[in-house]
Image (tube, rainbow, N blue to C red):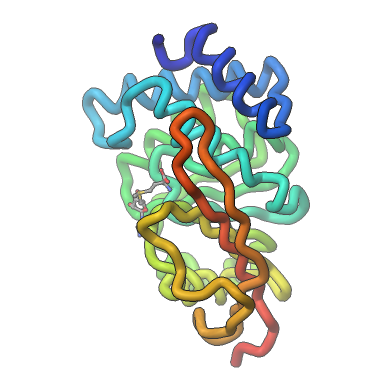
Length: 225
Ligand code: SAM
């Protein structure tokens, strides 16, 4: 099977539907193009270690979108450490109207993400080569984001500290976690950095592969100094 082929799109759409998510033809076509360009660029630019077409569908696209019902569709969304555009680009494809900012410290990854944005004709989305630590050094970014998403960048406490100044009051951080980065506690404790508390922990399994995943939701409490 070729990534992005009709067969690949059928697999993606059937597995998403099985998990309660209907992908329209425009969204499917965009995800297919993202997957194709990802693997094309990956031959010369190191973007992802996942290159098997089924794994690309499951570990990149389905993982990004399956827990999306828990992520609000209103408000400015920031994806920290987006890499090849995950989870930001698949979320944007599902929600064309939601304003989004994707950042990564790596120039080559952001060049790729900018190419995908142009290639797919996505609007109301920005991509910047910047580390999260530097983004909050600009006053206009402090408290700017209602939603921050992040997958496979750093541990829970470090991400909570990074996200805190960027989050709007009562903003939320959504951490996509695999089995290797299970948090120490997800039961509503407040030990993940001053001003952040764990609000929810959503477990799901990746289709076909069966791997366990968790979406940890941290909320800004408003108690930070
Ligand atoms: N989120 C993508 C995914 O799940 O496929 C990429 C994950 S990759 C393992 C981690 C990415 O985070 C890399 O592209 C790296 O450059 C970026 N990164 C790490 N720390 C960062 C920081 N403090 N600010 C911005 N980007 C960061």
